[in-house]
Image 1 (cartoon, rainbow, N blue to C red):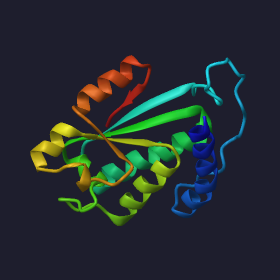
Image 2: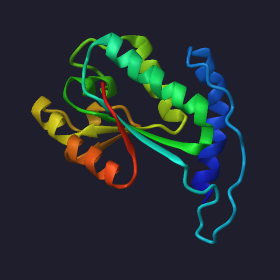
Image 3: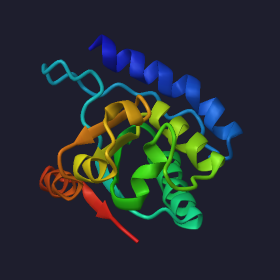
Amino acid sequence: MIDKILNLIKRVLYSAGLAALGLGLTTPALSLAEDDGDDDLFGDPDHRVVYQFNKAAPDYMEQILFSVGAMLRKHGDNIHIVVAAFGPGIHSLAKVPGRPVPGLVQQRVASLSQYGVEFHACGNTMKALGWTEKDLVDFATVVEVGIDDIVNLQEQGYSYISW
């Protein structure tokens, strides 16, 4: 429960920084859900989204991250977002990308993670690149198979976004 409160505080504090990075996020509405007795102080969000992030083209990466920011602006604390990075898109989560990743993309990824967006890295892609968790930014979560992660999230009610 303390982790949830600290996460909420971080999200509020980082919202000002996100606006400065061009994401235009504002402080989300702070409302407490009814206590249903299950240790979940804020309740489950009404919206859950998983974005496929599998290309290295700068325009593609910027479009995905803009969409993530737009969803956060619209839904505030009432959304949970996962960005599933695999294939060439995984380079956006690398400390030292093996492909060119614009600095603004790296900044937005880091900022969005501070706002509660989860970034999942495909273990299969990492194996193909010869990477370990040490090659990734600290906030990335490694999953065994990126596509399986997306399927599992869909089965948990996440809407799947790809383009």
